[in-house]
Length: 369
Image 1 (spheres, rainbow, N blue to C red):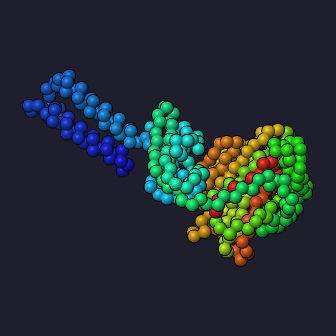
Image 2 (image 1 turned 180 degrees about the vertical axis):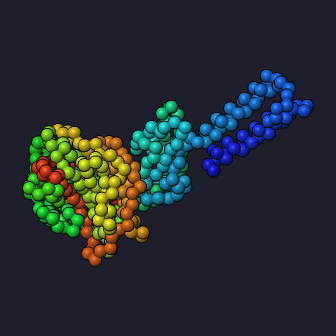
Image 3 (image 1 turned 90 degrees about the horizontal axis):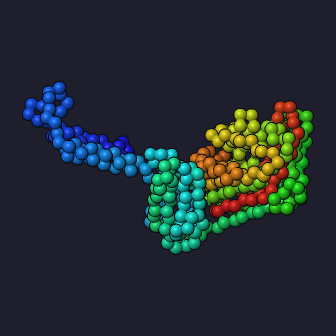
């Protein structure tokens, strides 16, 4: 039983006793068919006010913000990982994080999970929410930030020299027919940064794929947070051509593979994540809205991994500013290979197969270890 339900039940029982006490007159009995005496207007008003107070109090307890991480009074490393949820008698429309009275994050959802930068020392953390009736809810706590964790930012990866491919390695088991595919860097149109990359696929084999990856410097620790983002442009006339568009980061660390892969699957319009251990794609519950042709779209995937429990976590997917918090986790996979860190991009042909191309710009990886 929730605290609000408990209060409502206890208060209702008290109200029942009050009603019995006020209405038992002569031979009359509350709940019987025996006539009772009419009560005064003052007594009726007091009873109505009592019941109203109970209902308002119970409703108030149902509306709240709960901060689940970090704990109040705790000492954490920067960036601060904040997890919170909100509930009310009306739908939650927005949540916002304030650190030392400054807004640092906002999301149109009833829950949030994100990392917030902060300097060492004491900080006042507030998580505020709004519901559809305009009601404001908030929770606050004081925390301390210790030594900052190391943050690494890798920018404009689509421009870098050293991209690789491995034939059909994008297929399970690295087998199957090969597509014709290519990557061209230094594209001046379309572009946002001044230099995008063209990824192109074709050929005569249905459902073949093209896979490109970049081997980054080896990371010797697990990721407290990992953010992989880029801008995607689909040319006019090709908005329905793909079978799927995929992207991933992957870390091999101390005998385990932590795979963070996403797939925009066109048949069925699903966003799916890859279970590397079971070698299968799984529906994330997020519906794919196909990318509008002739327009740039911003994609952000957030992850982290746990080297103690050997677990991969998908924390969120953001498409064009709409963030979808997630709590998807998979067991890491044992490996005999050495430590390694890569990011990748992949195009899949449909059953026709229909050739197509896309452009990628502002590809960036940000991680904290």
